Amino acid sequence: MFFGEILSLVVALSWTVTALFAEVGSKRIGSLPFNAIRMTLSLLFLALTLWLVMGAPYPRFADAGTWLWLLLSGVVGYVVGDYCLMQGYIIIGSRFGQLFMTLSAPTAALLGRLFIGEAMRPLAVVGMFVTLGGIALSVLSKQDPSADASSASRHAQWHLSLPPKGVFFAAMAGICQGAGLVLSKIGLQRYDDALAAQGITSDMVPDGALLSLPLSVSIPFASTMIRGTIGLVGFLLLLLLFSKEGPRQLRQALGDRKALRCAFFSMLFGPFVGVSLSLMATQYTATGIAQTIFALTPVLIIAPAAWLFHQRVTLREVLGAIVSVVGVCLFFI
Image 1 (cartoon, helix red, strand yellow):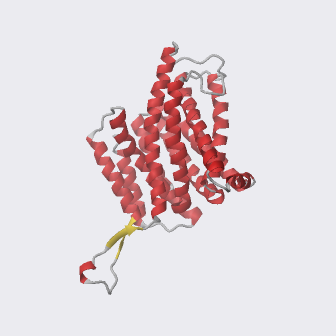
Image 2: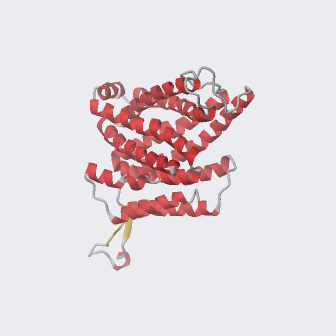
Image 3: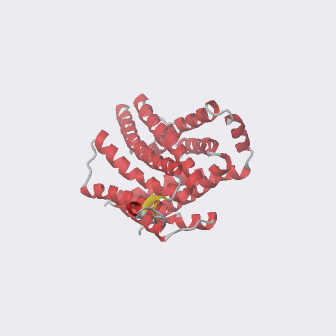
């Protein structure tokens, strides 16, 4: 009973853990080396998973159109999105970084309406403003005017309580995740079309698979591997071609055992355990309930981030995170 809901809570906790490890690792070795290492580990685990569930360590049955859309999704969601997310972690920390990830829901809703004709219910529109309001509540503070200010300017001024560069990167990460999700949906639909064109149904178990799981379970992992492939290529290109210190940074990163452990656990609890259990959770409970519980990460991360990184947490920031999560929940009611 409530198995799906429990799994969903475990997913939210897993994403909290991966964010904390990612903050530590990216601050130690930089966002590009950290992402390159984490993506390599993720692809190795995905290859093993596909070998078990599809009978081959690569995305079987995917046609050119599937690869195109999922590669585009990987560029937006992984290369740009994850780079911005790790930069955000470095500048403003994982707690605020995860708060801005709530922007993915309104972004996905807007782009889904524009590009694939998904309906937007009135509550979704309300949810957008509530989410934005929650973020604003967390990152804006009121500054009292100085005593020698002129009477015309003696009004409290609202200003960012975080570095603007960090806010930009974190906001871009949330927006890119939402855009990547829409592109992934298109790619998954193309994958289904490719299966149908080959006379394959989603309830079939591929020949040679070591685990008797239907393609409906394994296709999301195959899609993730396609996205991750371009993600790794993108990070390596950025690291090796556009940074003079790139090769040296990568060698140093590979010699940093603490950073490697952070990359491993960030990958394990994020792309591997988190994604796997999120897929399983939606099989045992309604998608809207699962997504609502998944969205608790910005709230769950407050206490461990404050404890681990000795951060001072204000009541305004806690309320802002809660309001932002409530806004995300409105998308799934």
